[in-house]
Length: 274
Ligand SMILES: C[S@@+](CC[C@H](N)C(=O)[O-])C[C@H]1O[C@@H](n2cnc3c(N)ncnc32)[C@H](O)[C@@H]1O
Image 1 (cartoon, protein in one colour):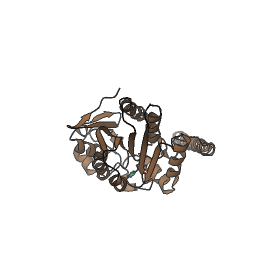
Image 2 (image 1 turned 90 degrees about the vertical axis):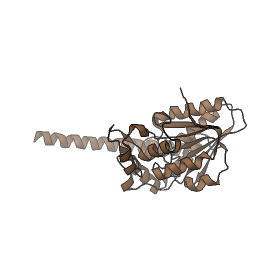
Image 3 (image 1 turned 45 degrees about the horizontal axis):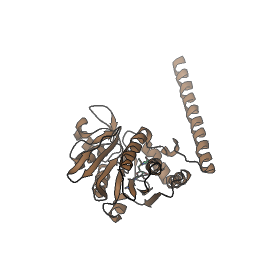
């Protein structure tokens, strides 16, 4: 009896704590919107890039350091509220090089209950997309970070926008759009022609590589966002894992889920970041 009462009190306390945290975060979000400060907090899953931010910045800095031409161009597929776009743009602004970031995203609903898998984040994202809040927040964040002079965007799905872009015009193409296999493979294929020789094709969410997982299970779930691997019992994005391995023919260079390969005359090569 005491045990059940204690559990009920504990559950109630957790719910109150959750509501309070949500209220505090909502107030912070509203204050940022009012005062034109950037917002990359937990509300609307606005903060996407997490610990991988450091690897994006390292990759951009390494490429910019050796860049000798007139304009360094980055293409980003999937921008959400702008956190990774701002990292790319900041790396350009902090360098001695002129450059730009082109963000491609429909900012429209694309996930449903059947294909989310084992994480609730896509549902939070889906609700935000349905309310049209994320596109507004993206524009707000780019302005608030002072990046609107070098960040442009095209609102539309990557397979409609990418074929309209000129070939060999980007020094980095970063893929972080839909995680479903059918879309990731198209993004890889459509990106290849856009990258200059010596440029980088990279992306997010490669939590596990194909040689580490139970491939048959991933194949069965490749149109799902996030599942658990049967052997390692770790969550991963099966569509990203399978498409990346298929496109490059095996293992790629990968840093905490941020993967990257260099396009050369002789094919794709791994890159080394420190
Ligand atoms: C994981 S979020 C991107 C996070 C962002 N790169 C960041 O770090 O802040 C995935 C994004 O892909 C976008 N997306 C979904 N389908 C897409 C498609 N077909 N083409 C381009 N973007 C797509 C979604 O609207 C969403 O903004």
